[in-house]
Amino acid sequence: MIILAGTPIGNLGDASARLIEALGAAQVIAAEDTRVTQRLLAALHIENRPRLIPLHDHNERLKAAELVELGRDADLLVLSDAGMPTVSDPGFHLVETAAAAGVQVTVIPGPSAVLAALAVSGLPTDRFTFEGFLPRKHGDRTSTFRELVDERRTMVFFESPNRLAAALTDLAAVFGDDRTVVVCRELTKFYEEVRRGSASELVAWAAEGVKGEICIVVAGAPKRVHSLEDGIRQVQALVAGGERMKDATASVALSTGLGKRELYEGALAAR
Image 1 (tube, rainbow, N blue to C red):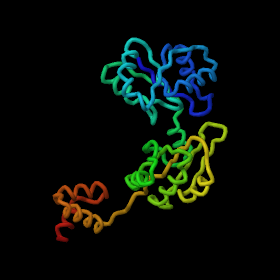
Image 2: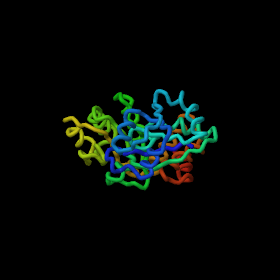
Image 3: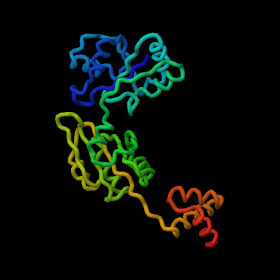
Image 4: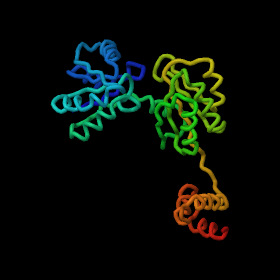
């Protein structure tokens, strides 16, 4: 079978007993970076020296079929450099290929920067969305934020420390200063740091220069109160764009919580 194993995101003490057992028994490991895996084996005092196969963003699609066949006849342990494989790390295409081929996939749960950041953020955790790494370029990053400005769930992003100040600047420009933002740095490590505030308040700190692994957690958009007049205007705009009145009314009712009948009758009366 194929075994996805979570590895420490910083503190080696977070290595589970199951992970250590699996590393000690593994004959073949598909690793995001074989050098990182070798250091992990040494740090955990594991004497086993399995065959290490690189599995990273640049070769995963090419290697997936070959690795799935390995996993058909023997156990294949899959590791990313830190955290859970497939979560903004290699592994998704491998699992996709294994599922299509009928090869069993299981998991050894472990540390996750996403969940760790969410847990310490102090923001709602009942519903959240993980958006991965933010785009590198200003325009693309701003477009991403604009797509998410009305997202009601707590949002979690990964970001490079070198781009953190720029990302917070763009976040403030799109989301405004009424959103709580939490920046988590070096989670589980010696220099762990959690900063809370608005995006613009955190820019000055980030501009001084930060190092390490970064997670940004952003509060979801507050529930908007829509008046019937606003809803009718939205219906009219959709109809003017070519939608049928019935479809436009249903769409606006779903997004605003206003009644379909009131919207429909109001839009008809306003013609």
